[in-house]
Length: 117
Image (cartoon, rainbow, N blue to C red):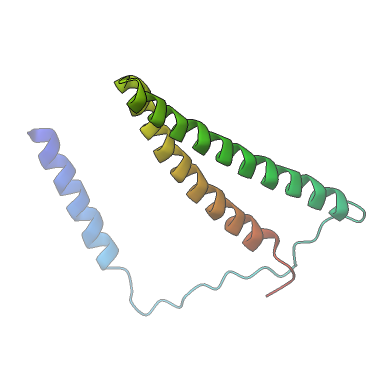
């Protein structure tokens, strides 16, 4: 009880301090003065490795999806609840990994970019 009350008090104090921050503070603009660029001669190799990794991860996602769906199907056919449950969890994990995969690709693309913005 005391721990919960102290946590609530701490959060309330932190919110009051954040609300007291000056509203007229100028926004800080973080722009890179130098464009990210691969060292000379490395870009073709980096592109090839990146392409292999992208297709490898995509293939693993596809294989995992097929195996998970097969596990669900086999579990239903042979009345094996554990196989169905693990297959359903596998499908959920594959969906989360696919979403993470696309987010990571967007983050990497924004870091390396195709030139200065």
